Length: 276
Image 1 (cartoon, rainbow, N blue to C red):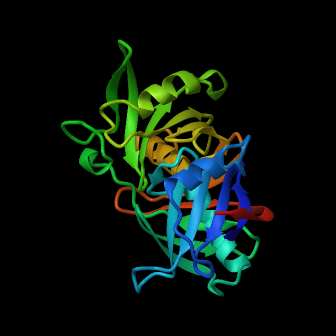
Image 2: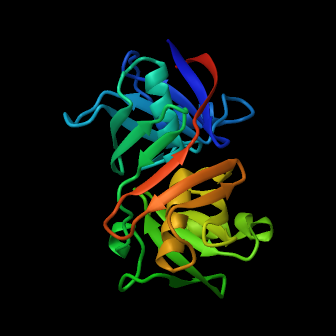
């Protein structure tokens, strides 16, 4: 059978989006791995699946598969593309959309200028909720990697993140340290790793090694986690701007117990069909 899909991106973090509300198919991890290959498939960082909700209080269910076939809880850039997609495909006429994800319920607000604001919910800071192996909650944690100790913040935005402050993102050991931390035993469900360079109280630069995808041009949940880490540790003030390789995101956070609000673009690239 043939399935219609849309290729989209949020700041270069790219997605294949499938509507399984008006189409019917059973997608398996092997399909994501096959389609995600940039040489022999469509090529993407994540596969986004739009489904009918199982919760009567939300509008859609949203599932996310990495290009290696692993299913993950949350994707902020994908959430913005999800919002644009369901409106463009006329699956909803709402501008404020509630979506059920594996990591919890999020709210998507499509603005008149085409930017999308995502209410990512409050960050989870308790180690067991991230999950991260630690005796107690702290602003940052020392973690040993190959005999050296790195200091990092551990935060969940529906998916686990480690955030390290660096002097310069251009020379940060993203491809060396990223995969080692991703598979570190203190992160039992693996982790996304952010390398944060603070420019001033309102501006920073960020590169992210994503769990199951490697370094991407942008990571929405990673940007949210980095902003939370920077605000908690007194490095930056809300609202702030994060510059990623693919572009800029605006993040607001009022502190513990409050939701993280992320605003950025979502772009349609092309339409196609794939054989299942």
